[in-house]
Structures are given as C-alpha cells and as structure tokens.
Image (cartoon, rainbow, N blue to C red):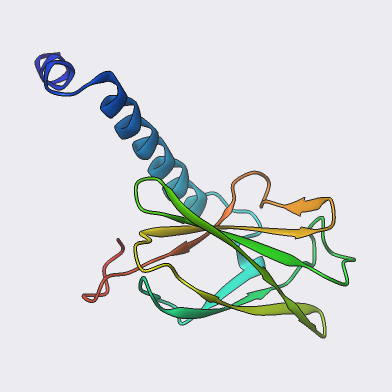
Length: 141
C-alpha cells in the first residue's frame, strides 16, 4: 500500500494510466507466447531481429480465416511504450505461403502484426502476432 501511495503522489494520473497500459500490453504479449494458437503460421527471419533490421516474414494461412486468400496484406505496428508507427506490406504468394520484407522501425521495442485479405482479418484468435525484438546482447527488448 505504501508503494502504491508513493506512486500516486509521485506520478500524475496520466503517467500511471500509461504505465498500466504498457504493463497490460506486456502481460498480453508474454501470454501470447505461452498460449497455443496459430503462432506457427508466421515465421520471422532472422530469428532474433533488432530494431532497424530488415526481416523476412513468411505467413502460412492454412487453418486461418485467410486460408483461401489469393492476396494478403500485412500491417505492422511498431511500439516503444506507445504506438510509434504503422506500415502495410503486400505479401507475395509462393505455393501455399506468403512472404514479404519488413524494415523494423529503429525505435521499436516490439512489433505487432495483423494479416488481412479484403475485409477478412487474421489476428490469431485476437491474441495477435508479434515480432519479438532483441538488443545487441541478444536479450529481448
């Protein structure tokens, strides 16, 4: 209780809301790696990307809402405590999978991804897809 009161007196309500929302986002992110779903639908190369890297995204829509899609667009959301930037990438179909290149924003600490074909969206059962980013020591940011 003392720590909570200290936080309240030392921070504005707006700062506390930002900290709470960032903490909530991180909990959801961590749980998304624990809860099974369609995480294997998206592959990222290199395996441990850093902010500023270009990555190759491979998306296999089998078993998703986009399974029959001929054209898929990927939206990437770059976060560093807040949403910094969003970009879209048209993926190229090769056989049953779609691939595309994405330049990770230099300020990003984590990147959220969504796939869409027209009005249909694939969000991994509302758990989202994430690209975990790493620092130069190979530790998650």
